[in-house]
Amino acid sequence: MKDVLDFLCQAMADLIQDKSVKFVRNFFRVVNDYTTAEEKDIRRTRAWAFEGVDEE
Image (tube, helix red, strand yellow):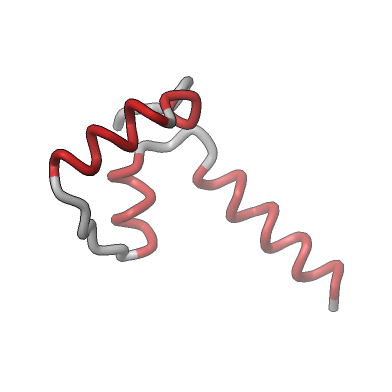
């Protein structure tokens, strides 16, 4: 069972790798509850997380 879980986790990671925040939110149906200011702050303080990301 662990092998199946590992495989599925890796498949999902591969699917969302380098995808935009918008893509991942839409894919998992996650509602964005950040304000514009909060999102800008997150992007500024964690800029490394957005490097190499396909914007669309």
